Length: 217
Length: 217
DNA sequence: TGCAAGTTTGCAGTGGCTGCATCTTTGTTC
DNA sequence: GAACAAAGATGCAGCCACTGCAAACTTGCA
Image (tube, rainbow over all chains, first blue to last red; front, side, top):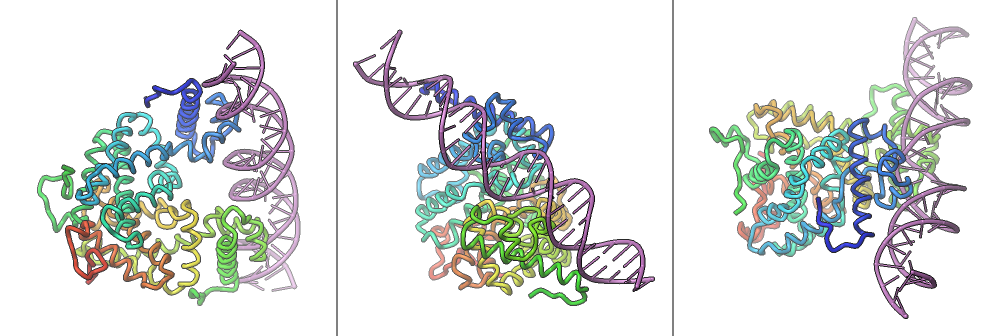
């Protein structure tokens, strides 16, 4: 699925093990529920020792919510490449493209993941707003773009709100079993946010399902 | 602090114990950090057995993030009383008033709580978006107001976004040590959201710290 | 006063998670 | 290809969060 080229056997095996653990965890928890699955069982299914599980994931939950590390670095890098004149919302939306593509590219895995995560609110909270360090980095990157002082509330608000938008889009995507494209749902959400979340009754857009779709380019 | 009237000795004692546990937990964790404090120590400080701790809180974290149960019910009830013509954002903002007042009324406790919560991202995520049941209820209440079908994304998006706004406002409030009023910060955040999070440079409001303050009435 | 219901507590047990020591695997260098 | 060093896997012992159960103990009420 992901690009393994240019890696020695060692790193390839690490990736495999990690993926096997995550897949096993998702499958088992989807079948039985979070509390009915032990780390021992997950490890067994991936054919490693329980101790090894914790060499890959700090907690049982981590194996379920996925990478989040690499993803975020990619988002940060993407954000850095967007020209500074682009407004914050648009910039973030386009920085998310990479992650979105990856999710839709691995739809089966991600639909399973979302199914699991949605059944366990603790996980749902961690899915997007899990990492504080990267969120902080995001806020700083935005502050630099917009020329805000970092303690002005604006960048933090934008990051939090777009995180919320991403989360709801993903939930909606998963709820529909992936029938509507994630890109579309995310654009719809960002559009609504950019429009100030207008009350649909006062805005009254006949025939439009979206309360104001915001085009990215 | 809270109103104890009309309760027998039994319920009064329960409230006391609960408050003592929460206070002890906050104090100890603020001093030493989450992992350096055991449930046993918290219970000891509140002069009950460790087993009793778990009669009051399902997890150690719960003792730190606070009630959340009663608060949410109150928000729901408040939302129900807001006339249906009021736009969604405004309705939610005003439904939050009760909680806000309580937070500012118990500022010392809440500043300590925020200090602790901000040092432990896991807790921060749970602070606002913790409970899935009530969040769901909120979405349904909103859907009923706006006449949306509940699976249309709009209500969920609004709830998620306003949650994010509330969270950032509280973080900002706590970061400033409560120097700016929470009401003011929340209004500022809601105003920015209602304005579509305008990029400050394009909006350009000379002299205004807020990127567009939205008046609630 | 006596009873029923609600609370506290101890105890035993499961399972998440960690540090440490040991063994195995992999990449490298000659 | 053999020796060696770095990195990874594993077992083990141990801490602690959390749960179910059964036995005290308190409280509210008749």
